[in-house]
Image (cartoon, rainbow over all chains, first blue to last red; front, top):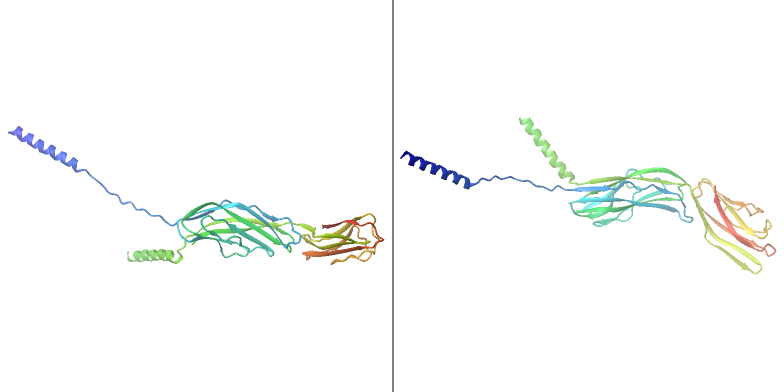
Length: 162
Length: 144
């Protein structure tokens, strides 16, 4: 009788164990995701020095250009634009102009930065895209009244903004 | 506790306000642009016509325009001829004319200064038939 009871008890325990294993176990995790607004612009360096060293007889304005630098940008926002400004006005009788190419936006063409202490539009209509190695072209011009101008610099800031 | 809670509310409110007021996403890159103007001088003769008329050779050059970035300029007119015309037989017209009787060969015609940006030179030469065979060239030289 004792043996039978023991066997029965063992059987019940064993079946309880098996049932516990077949129930399984699970856990959950809550994963939070977010894409923040992205706005990035970079340039490849500084343009070569723009030195006017020749005069064109009969022409009041002589100019020299450089198109060796590039810019790249990434944005996941709509209706972005690139504006340009200069840290100080150009000397009298001279002009500094810039032209940015764009495959995704609309370039404003050659823009006069000579007095652009306040930013001016150079590329508009940029929406959710990336652009790589787009051309930047600078033109420096001096009229005939400028007899000689020592080499100097200006800082041009390109800003990607909405 | 109340104070800490109040400060916390103010901080949260200011952060939310700045996002709403500015609402701008910007990224900037800078370039340093170096420029300058060196001393230069260039002159070109726009046209030079020689039109023999009978026994009179008229050498008529139209406006020559020069541009310079020099402190001082001089334009030198020299010409080649089999024999030099006698002084006084020539007529020439320029903005700054040499003195009458000046030998035209290797003579400074124009002398300007910093204020001279563009100078128009009109040169008119007329040779009498008794003069030499002709003028083969006119050379304008700008120098400082």
